[in-house]
Length: 249
Ligand code: ADP
Image (spheres, protein in one colour):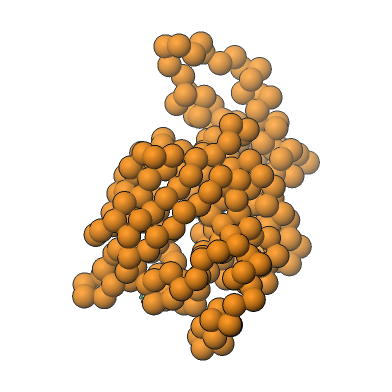
């Protein structure tokens, strides 16, 4: 990566399940090169919001734009083409292929997708170079020849992150990237996400509030389908409302 990311903007997005408004008019703006966390108690509407932003589900109301292009309700593959990198779907790994092969395939697919008349076909050197770069970047260099299935859960998360980045997204969205990891792995994946956010915008839904407050630049707090609070981490961290909803949940 290195091209800088696009701004993701949601305005007035809403989604009901039956008569229940899970997301009730949410505005959200993820700026470039920002680690932006979406937090809130269980049932606040975070995952539904995330799914609206990635095009997994269409909104009943409102707009979602990425770099000014309307992406609301775009099918997941279309959202990916438009630059949404959605990480932490470990199911997308090829378990029998090596770590290196998995990353190489993702880099190749991304090159193929970007190839067109004005851009000459990319050489194998580029693909090999980029693959190595992604592996180093994710801290997987020593494990290149291991089958993906032999990695620890944390290792698979790192590989998954490398795959998401190999597609050269203009924004990275991660739903609970730290869930189920050991303390050391949380530290590692958290630091990687921080590093990524120096290049691209990163939006994450995360339960580990202490880590969110340590890593994030910007925090949106949801409660009961709405935005309760939104601002720089320093502002949100000290707000009494945040403490209240967490103690209440
Ligand atoms: P969070 O991620 O903050 O825990 P969710 O977005 O998962 O919140 O859910 C918000 C509310 O919407 C919850 O009350 C949940 O039960 C409800 N909900 C989520 N998805 C569905 C669905 N597919 N059908 C019915 N209700 C749903």
